[in-house]
Image (cartoon, rainbow, N blue to C red; front, side):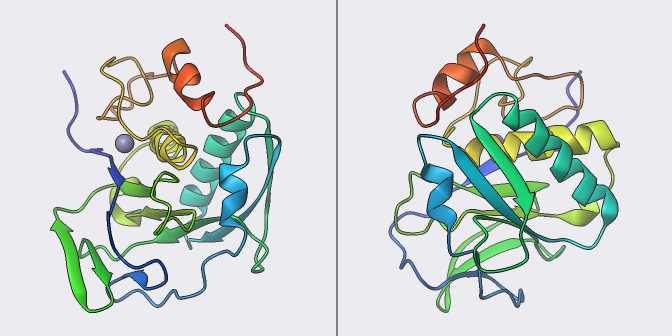
Amino acid sequence: MLKNLAVLVAFSVAGVAATDLHLNNLAFNTPCLKYNELRNAGHMDIGVLLVVKDERVRAATSEALNRWSQVIDMTWHEDRTSTCALTIVEAPVAGFRYYSGDRLVTNIPPRTARAQLPQNADTFKGIVFVNTARLLSLDKYWMADAMQHELGHLFGYNSHSDNPRSIMYWNVTGDNQKLQKEDVKVIARYHKTVLHF
Ligand SMILES: [Zn+2]
């Protein structure tokens, strides 16, 4: 039976201005400058800015990045300066309410995490928003699965798998889901892969 706790969806806001995307009540106005590195079809060297306090979330993010480095041609390192490419930032527990300027774009029930999609040319800043409270309700493997799933979106997987065994299934269940061959084919449209089935 599927668990409903970790419902993960891709974050997509069409048609809003590029520079003013922010989360309500979230004082975070300086995302990484090199987010376009996440669109690099060759080798990616990803500086990661982790704006999260809890060590378990940091560890899960590390694990998820390490898993992806075994699939696509990329290396990563922590980077606390503006030369970073990927931002992992805590969203307020109150919910994921996205604003463009003063305009409420969407107001949905709280999710475990959301990722921006590189296909959204105007809004993509290489950000994964995490709901720390919900993430921490998962065990460490499930947390890493959730982060792996979100990074999949960030690397170009702009939909979901219909295979419940896939890490890119819409519902991350914590039940031994893995990246599947068909998932790698999707990612390979955007990135050089190093994993061959
Ligand atoms: Zn998703």
